[in-house]
Figure 1 (cartoon, helix red, strand yellow):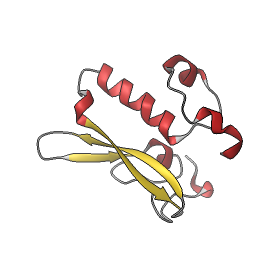
Figure 2 (spheres, rainbow, N blue to C red; figure 1 turned 180 degrees about the vertical axis):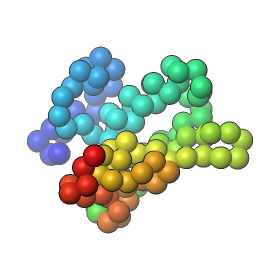
Figure 3 (cartoon, rainbow, N blue to C red; figure 1 turned 45 degrees about the vertical axis):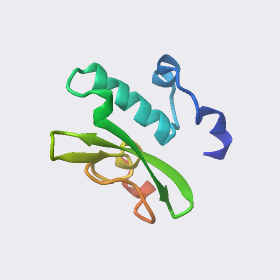
Figure 4 (cartoon, rainbow, N blue to C red; figure 1 turned 90 degrees about the horizontal axis):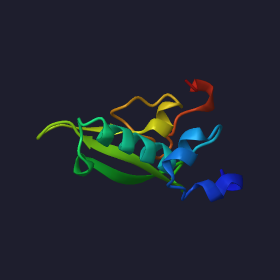
Length: 102
């Protein structure tokens, strides 16, 4: 993670889309947000950035998506790859495991 710190603040869709290997949660959320809005099913204001910590010390970002007037879902594509299903998000020691990579 630390060796690729220069990728943390990238916001060029094409560059991020073509990237192979490690990707920060911020980049995954950026791509997902663009795809959801471009799909026409969601508006930008339906998607809220949320912040938490993984392992209690590492800042982490996930999305909270408005499904309808009363229902929201947390979506964390970074944590999903480590076994945390949509509806939940990586936080504290619930940050997934390398043994459960999907």
